[in-house]
Each structure stands twice: as structure tokens, then as C-alpha cells.
Image 1 (cartoon, rainbow, N blue to C red):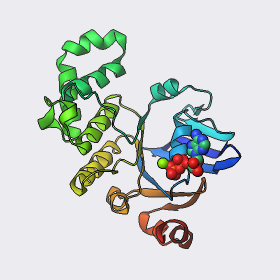
Image 2 (cartoon, rainbow, N blue to C red):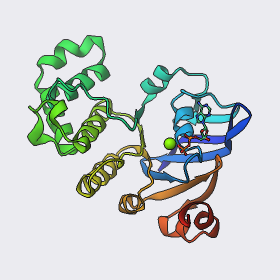
Image 3 (cartoon, rainbow, N blue to C red):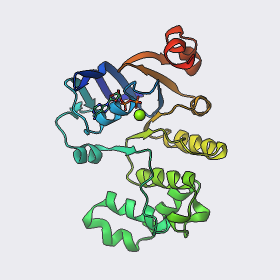
Image 4 (cartoon, helix red, strand yellow):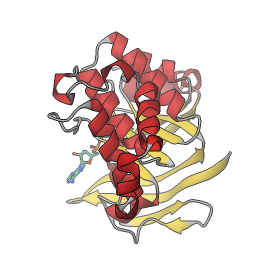
Length: 246
Ligand SMILES: Nc1ncnc2c1ncn2[C@@H]1O[C@H](COP(=O)(O)OP(=O)(O)O)[C@@H](O)[C@H]1O
Ligand SMILES: [Mg+2]
């Protein structure tokens, strides 16, 4: 395992309020990491900084074996560098089928020169089927995305992100609004995706985090309060005081 993303000493102030305070986090490749912490801890802002949506006032964000700084890059440059992000609300094309949604995401990745090749090729169809299998929607390939359940839409969007083959996938509260069975399936998808890439998941549902079975980072007031296995961090008295015990 080598370090893929190194965030060190970042701080962000919004109108005088320090949302991120000297935060340092390292993510390896491959790795599955859960980020937990109370509302307002800075979890989403952390993802905003990594994806270039928010600029930190200080600190460094270093990416890949060439140790490139992400801070000078635009959001689209960061996405092209291999960082994919899943927002809370699914943004699939409702009138298109699951197959079409996945194929479009694949074409976006290939760029204009490969579009014709990929549109017709068996390789593209095989990759679409592989992605559908990975997200558990193989039987739903011909269904319109608008007909899918909330959970299935979330999986489709994860599949569309995986089609871009990111080295780092950032996922913000995927389990919200899902049934228990959907949550279980979502942990399976994320665990599998993290076998070959880095996946960072923000989640409140402790059962979900336990199923992920990965290293956990607890954020509080914009800094890391504790880090380690779920058992390790949930025994931490400060974590109990600010998060678990409430
Ligand atoms: N664009 C923004 N402008 C002003 N305040 C913000 C902005 N984004 C986040 N904040 C504030 O920063 C803090 C951290 O927010 P956030 O990262 O969304 O927390 P979390 O995702 O852990 O719940 C909150 O107090 C929030 O109100
Ligand atoms: Mg948030």
C-alpha cells in the first residue's frame, strides 16, 4: 500500500468560523476508509477541498506518486486526475435505461476519439455488463433509471462513477434513505470497489460503518479526533463524549 492522497495541515474559515482546523489525513491505494463525526464536523468540507470545490486557507493536498498539488487545479482537472465524487442526491438520467446511463458514463471516460469505437464495440457492452454486475443491476439493464428504487439509483450512480475508473472515490452519506437490505448491498459494492482503488465514505449509520470493516477517521470541529479500527475509536472517551454518547 502506498499513499495516494496526503492532506496536511489544512484550515478553512467561512466568515470567521473555522470549519476545518489544521486537518491532516492520508489515504492509501487501495484502501477503504470511513469518516464519521457529528454534524458540522467538516466531513463534507473535507471532500469539497479534495475535489477543488473549496479552497483551503492553508495546508497542502498532495496526490499520487508524482506528489502533485491538487490546490492549483480546477474541479474538472481534479476529476480527470482520477478523483470521483458521489453526492447525496443521485443524478442519473431518469428517462434513459440503466444500460444507457452506464454506457454514457463509459463514453465520457474514453473521450471524443474513442466514442465511435466504443459505441459499437463489444468491449463497451462487456464493460457495461461488468459494471452492472458489480452494482447488482444486471437484471435491470433495460429498465429506465426513473423506475428504479432510491437505493438502486444510488448504485447506478456509483456504477457510473466506477465507469470513469477513478483511483479515489469519495462517497457522502450513501445509506441515507435506504432500506436495511439496500444498505447491506451498498456496503458490499463499496468494499468490492475498494479492492482496486481508494474509497472514502462519510456515514452516520454505525451498523453500516461496522459492515465496511475498515479504518475509521473521526472528525470533530474540523480536526481528526481519533483514527483506527471502529472498536478502537468507539472506545475513545472523547469520541463517546462528542459523538456517540449524544
Ligand atoms: N460554503 C460554506 N459557507 C459557510 N459555512 C459553511 C460552508 N460549508 C460548510 N460550512 C460550515 O462549516 C461547518 C462544517 O460543515 P460540513 O463540512 O458540511 O460538516 P459535516 O459534513 O461534517 O456535517 C458547518 O458549521 C457548516 O455550516
Ligand atoms: Mg456533510
